[in-house]
Length: 126
Image (cartoon, rainbow, N blue to C red; front, side):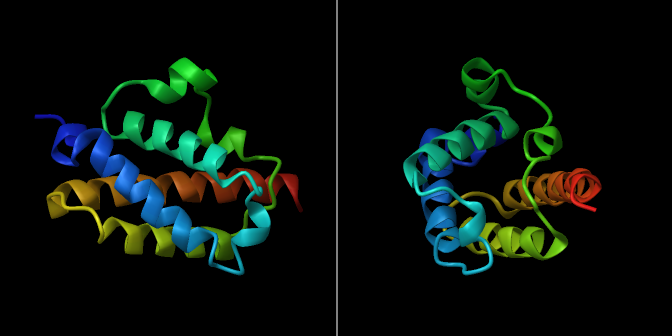
């Protein structure tokens, strides 16, 4: 069984995305980085996480894929932003009924991704 299936498939990913963005849009550090169109942002994240967990390649099919760090390179994302983002994700992951090992694997991949985003963004805003 794939990580996506163990995570609960579409239902699990949507639950994570909903919980996550409720936290993000309530965080005063993160809110300025996110557009008013919350549903569009949630749809992109749903597609990204679905693919990251080994589900359908929605993000690549609909957005053409691309390196996550390069997609965010024009945004002033700092280590502080990444820390808040990861904190929201960690809290949101607690709401999903999935094996801890799958949630930890996903969180570890997101830690690595956020580090790359911060590294790339820091070169553009020095």
